[in-house]
Image (cartoon, rainbow, N blue to C red; front, side, top):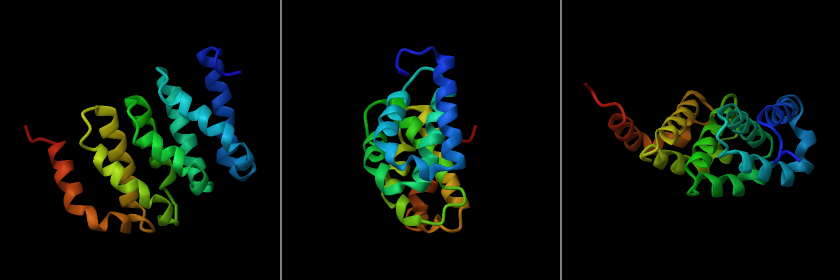
Length: 162
């Protein structure tokens, strides 16, 4: 259906689903087995606006269904496809704001910290953005308490003084 579509049609389709996720995500629970493979398939597409919708949608779905999408998201973020890893790392930027359930993020903190050292610039940037959102959320920033030194060291390596 969406596989052979033009980029504009894909964008519109994925935007429509994103609007449903933002406004009434609970109604999509029965469709997660269809949505997650679709999103992960489009997480490595060349079109950056589509990847942005994918990362936002995954992040917003993670708010409502953390346990259901955790395995696929963990597999993707620890995978070998650079663009997919970058897209999935960015998804946490959209799920940490106002989130009060720090338990759902426990398995993702260490992988996100490790991604700061990745040679790919997009992966570094997206993981730092997501970790930055975790820091700003007083409900979940406790997850980073044991990793402050490591985070500071890695962040300093990425910000050389000229």
